[in-house]
Image (tube, rainbow, N blue to C red; front, side, top):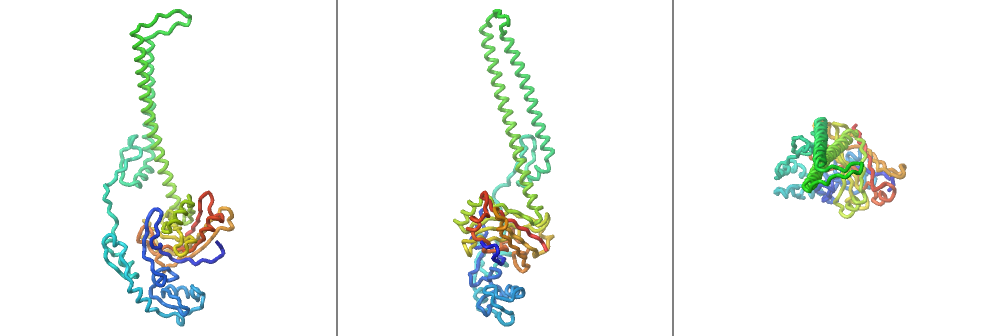
Length: 417
C-alpha cells in the first residue's frame, strides 16, 4: 500500500448482493457500459468524449470545470469541442427494465433504471413490516425489590433506570435492611433453640464431679431440637443466598445500562471526530474473504449533539477483491428537518499504523452537493456512500502494522463547512 499514491473519492452505492454481518442491503447495479466512471451510477444524459469514454453530462461538466482533462486517461478535453450527446446509449438505458425491490411483497411493476428511485418512493408496497408478535412487556430490572413499572421497549427501560436511580437505591436499602432483620430474627431463634437444648441436658461440672445421665426421653428431645435448628438455619441460608443473587443481578443490569449510556454519549458528543476500533478483526476478515457480500458497519456518530450522523462501511471491493472498499454513509436522526441539505463539509480518514505512525494512511475528501450520498436520508441509512472503492490492499493492512492485538483502528473526522 503506497500512502503517497493519489486516490479519487467518489460516490458508491452498496454493491448488489452485499450483505452486512447483521443486516441485508440490496440495490440495482448497472452494467459497466452503462455506468458513469465518476458517480458509479447509471448514466444520466449520457455523453461521449472524443477519447471514447462515456459520462453523465453533469458529472463530466463538473469534472472539466475543475481539471480540464478526461478522468480516465488524462487527455485534455473541452465541453464545446470534445463532448457529444450519446443518444444511442440513452435509448439503450431507457429500454432496460428493472423489477421493483418490493416484488417479493407483490409489486409487479418494471421500470427503466433511471425511474426506479422515483417508483420506490411512491410504491404502495414500500411499507414497514407489521409485526405479528404480541407487544412485549418488559418488567423493571428491580422488580424483585419492589419496582412495579413495565415497559414496551429496551430504550424505555434504559431511560427508567437512568431517571430512577434514587428510587432504585431506596429499594436496595430496603432489601438490605430486610436481610439484616432476618439475620436478627434468625439469631434470636437460634438462642431460643440453644436455650431449649441446654435445658434438656446439663454439662458436667469443671471439678470433675459426676453428672447424672439424662433420661432417654430427654436425649431424643435434644436430638430432635438440634435437627430442627439445622433445618431452620439451612432454609434461612438459602433464602439469603437468593436475595443476594437477585441484588447482584440488578446491580449488574444497572451497570450494563450505565455503560451503554456512556457509549451513546461518546457517539453523540464526539463532534465528528470518531475512532472506530474493529476488534476480532481476523475472524471478520475471514468471513468477508469467504463471502464477498459481507461487510462491516461502524456505530453511527454525530458531527454535533444535534447535527449530522454518519457511519463507516468497510468491505471487500467488488471491483478488485484484493482491496478494501471504504465509504461513509449518512444516517437518519431526529433532527434532520432542522439541518441544511445537502451536507457540505470536509471528511478526513486515517487508517492507523499501530507500530509506526509515519506509515499511517491519511486521506481527505470534500463533499459533493450534486451526489445523492449527501442529500437528506430517506431511510435509516443512506444506500449511497462516499469514499474509495479501492482504499487499501488487504495484504498490506494485515502485514504492515495496521492490525495489533487483532484490532484495526480507523479514525474519521467530519467537519461541516
